[in-house]
Amino acid sequence: YKRDKRDGETVFDVLNLETFEHEPAQSPDVPLVGEAQKQGDLGARLRFVMQRGEEDRHARYLRDTLLPDLAYASRRMPEISDTLENVDHAMEWGYGQQAGPFRMWDLLGVGETVEQMDSLGIEVAGWVREMLQGGNESFYKKEGTSELQFSPVNMEYEPVREDPMELSLDRLREEGKEISGNGSASILDLGDGVLCFEIHSRGNSIDAAVVEMGYEALNRLEEEDDWVGLVIGNEGRNFCVGANIGEMVEEAQKGDLDSIAEAVDALQNLLMGFRFASKPVVAAPHGQTLGGGAEIALHADRICAAGETYIGLVETGVGLIPAGGGTKEMVRRLVSPAMHTRAPSLPYVQEVFQKIALAQVSGSALEAKEMGFLKEDDRVVMNADHLIHAAKRETLDLADGYAPPVRDKSIYAAGTVVRAAIEAAVIRTMIWGRYATEYDGVIAKHLARVLTGGDVSVPQWVPEEYILRLEKEAFLELLKNEKTHERIGAMLKTGKPLRN
Image 1 (tube, one colour):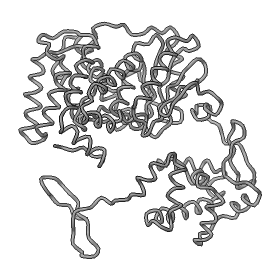
Image 2 (spheres, rainbow, N blue to C red):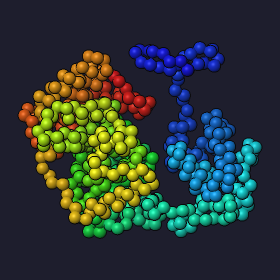
Image 3 (cartoon, rainbow, N blue to C red):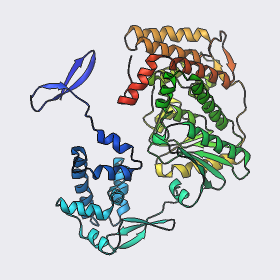
Image 4 (spheres, one colour):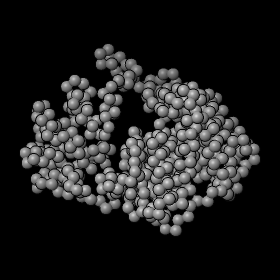
């Protein structure tokens, strides 16, 4: 590799092994990956790829690297552990894999995979063959609601160790604890009068079906006496990555802003319903908690976050600003408390402005506390498997003697003077210094206007709904702009922000 400068940016050129000249790196086009992602769960994706090992070189690469790894894991048992779950946990927790080798092997089908290994000359441990010859087709199996694992020591199934601090939503679903659901979200009974609103849409993004199920969860919480509180959580790779921007830009390009405005209203009203519910609402974020996902968490009474939580309001990266109350919540958390002490407002407003304008994302839950996304009394859970259980306990603790927040003028609007100061000190300087484009400046001015209360000339306290209206106005205005459409399109295509 060779580091170089091009158009003012640092780039890494790669050596062409045919010409032995360095040239710009090219992103590989791997259609197989896109096709596999459409297949559903991890097992379906793996099987889809492995079945194409003879016809596709990328599938062949996965087959020729994965199968030896699985076989190697079998040959190391019971040398490194008596139980399969220990090896699987080591790979899942230590390397961030969705499934360890034996769980992955089960997803592929143990018998079929052993046949493939034999045809490729890959050595498989004898105990695996004995297991199959004994009529046992998988390393793990269900017996009622209990899970068993095959023991390579005793050559029989033994119970998987149960962790009393782990509350599995999938297991609750198997036990018939799902109350309602659709393709994007579900409502489950966690026991002890605690409901769970679970998002499981594609990519854990917010779509109309998620909002619909959110309203049902809120209505059940408020109207049914069986429930004392609500947990918002799931067991996906990420808590929630925000709104489905692909659908949104399609509607905007057709000029259908009315339907987008209705969707914004629906999300704002749902999150305000969570915030002012008569019973406690606890959010359990983990992984990427971005945009609308962060807004969901910010409207809960308490956040119970996994240690590896990456939270941020990242809408400026696609040419927008938060419209679900994220801007409002950051002002309420970071600006309003300081104003009760009559401190100068500019430093606090500027701090919030920079967090949102620069799309800052925490590197952990502890850093999220430092950044103001989490409050001091919010909880950090280092073991993500314990997160739902911890959030349930937090909900029960809050339910005892709970009183909902009071609806009042809780947002400090700093006014047009502070807005002008931000525009002069930050926005213009960044554009003049070429740290930001002209359109970055347009987005930043909309953000500054919302943060400081719109056209409020004199600093004053305003209700939360006032800032929500400003958020919506700015969001819709930016969504009309072709440059925002370009940014959204680039993000969907490349996964990287476009600076146009």
